[in-house]
Image (cartoon, rainbow, N blue to C red; front, side, top):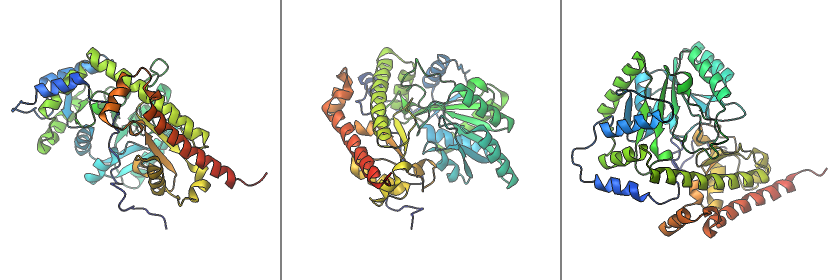
Length: 415
């Protein structure tokens, strides 16, 4: 009998945290944090002036200026999404699959969450026709859909939604009166920015979109929780900003003062930060391409990774070979691959996909884990993907998938 509520396999309802980047902490960031370690006053709820000004400048450089009073900061994007969900009320719509941390905060508040299919060419945004049908069905059943969470540079699929696909989804959402939250955590991690057009939903629908960005996506280590949000330039946006601050105040959800100082420094994007971001993206992009090649060569399905530190794979074509190892659902696939690869390989059920689907997300950062000396070596090497320990990890992954491919071929009926 298939497990629907797997036990002793981690927080299935909440999913894995953001993956690490496998690199040492940037010395300049560490210095800024250490210099602020003796601050006794703490950071105000919603962020202090230096942090909020830095966030406004960050967005202005990306074509999304924000006036004072329309930006807040919190201790990670989950806290901001929790506050937004509490304030907006109603039912929540998310793509399928979606980031593992989106749905739990709606459930925590007792809000229904409805997953919407994504188009064939990308994840992160709903198919517009599926969105309209889902909204119609939810309302017919007495529901009250109000919020759509989406992501142009997506976790878990590592895809970037084409502007025309995004535009259709945004128009459909606007026509149904939904407020949009655009998770832009991974927007600064495009693998080939010269070949990839990333457009924020806020550029298409500025009066109805709140932008949220967790700085652990590109600018800060994952253990330093800080995120920023930008509200629409409208009366409704002002009211939303004020009510979100009320929720954050009730929770005393504030960024730790040393982390706030480091976040403000990172958001101004000095040369050491931009150089580190570029180096990390280059490393993870190469590893992601190698992972994608290994999965596809074995007969699995995966969209080419375009951003972030992930690869999302459909191993349904290898079902027969996997069943020989006792794998029949996503939890069993997670157990099998995590053991074979020696690293977490969360199944698609953690991202809202059906338990029966053999989907899995791989993290490039997990292939780069290791001692501090190795982390530093990756940073200083002109070709870090060619280092022996990185090559060993990639070779192990290729070997696991080559074995599955060979087993799948043995299961094929004779022609």
